[in-house]
Length: 109
Ligand code: 2BA
Image (cartoon, rainbow, N blue to C red; front, side, top):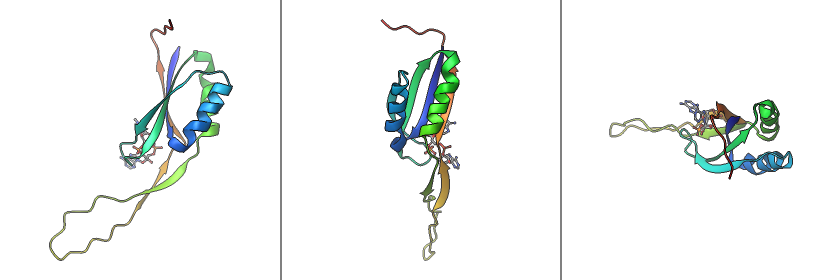
C-alpha cells in the first residue's frame, strides 16, 4: 500500500478528482496554500495498491498543467528619497508535485 500526496493547482483539482473517481480510485482533497506564492492550491491524497501507482501518476500528469505565474519580490529596506521599482519575477508552477509514501497499515471500518 502506498500513500500518494499530490500538490496541484486549484484550477486542476476538480477535473483531476473527476478523472480519478471515474477510474475507480478513492481520493481526498484538502485546500492548501503554497508557501512561496501564498496562493491557494489543492493537495490530493490517495491510498492505493503499489501496482497502480504508475497508472495514478499518469492520470495526474494528464490532468495537471504547468503554468507561468508572477510574484512581486519583497521590497528592500529603503533610505529616504530612494525609489524602488518592483519587477515581478516569473515562476513555473506545477503541473503537480507528488510524493509517494509507504503505508504501514490501512484500515477501513
Ligand atoms: P508554492 O510554494 O507557492 O510555490 C510555487 C512555485 O514557486 C513553485 O512551483 C516553484 O516554481 C516556485 N518556488 C517555490 N519555492 C521557491 C523558492 N524557494 N525559490 C524560487 N522559486 C520557488 P512548484 O515547484 O511546481 O510547486 C507548486 C506547489 O507545490 C508549491 O507552491 C508548494 O505548495 C508545493 N510544493 C512544491 N515542492 C514542495 C516540497 N518539496 N514540499 C512541499 N510542498 C511542495
